Image (cartoon, rainbow, N blue to C red; front, side):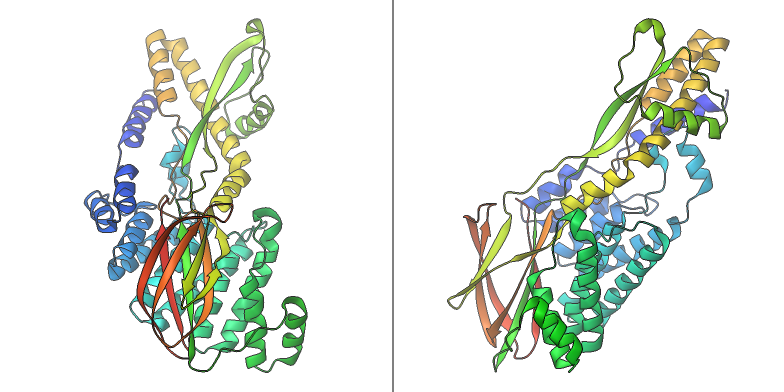
Length: 449
């Protein structure tokens, strides 16, 4: 008991220390000054590198055109994630009597994949396509690792990263790797479509047809042509514009408080296995109202939640040289984030209940020794109970893509941002975009509304 109360109080201090305020980051990005957001995060960098701060730092650096700094931050973040994938026993044990916020944050599977997307874009901005392809291969290996390690891998984010990799492989002339990536993307999109709702993008189907024809893989060409139709050849002296449009913010995690009644007739021991068993019993009592005469204790716990928060801009049309093309949704990060947390809810709730039961038993023991000690222990337990709301908050809400042929030369693009009904809410110009014959110009563009 003499060790437990100080531990709870120390933990209260740790989880109560704010590293940085996301509002400050958001202000810089929303105001068109990503360098301010990056400098703020740099100034408030923790002494020990951690996720998700490195993700936030890397992405703001990307938008501030600090591509080398962004890549360094992504490298550190991935190294931390790999090291933490194997759980720290000591930190896990500590989290069971304090807060999930003490547990090492590994990064969600989709976050780690999207880090490779932005890392590759850093290299594309620097005209380092070979280095970008390395990131694609790292993403491919990570997806295979998830498939092998997770019995029920949901493929969230895998379709988009495989599709993006195929685009880069095709742009570099590595058509065999491009076809492999496109095939994987088709499989991953189909595997996750029933849950996440994103179907195989039309352009992905056309890409499968186009590349299998270039490789003279007749069986593949015939099969994909039947599924997706034929795709026109690139006109002479034309190149391709490939633009990824990133809109809004992924919604932030909130906190939900739940109550579970412990009855006077309940009997459970103090070892872990018994606590886990009783936690499963309590799970079935979520929100249950019982008579006060039957109530021994009302257990309060906090778990993370995510509510939908869609941006105003929900689509894009690009107009150039009298031609227009609407962007296609290729990744819905909000839906992936919500469904990922939903899939984790049972495990989070059981772990939270086990922790709350441990605190309850500590408080009950302390109360028997001394009323004041019991009250202090109970207060410390309550104050250290908070949901783990950590996530990569600067990620966009959705990603759209436009792929269109354009004559070689310099072009000015008009970007029209659409609402959910397809009406134009705003327009912006993207000037002096260079298109080279028989090559792809790959860009990304971000709005925050």
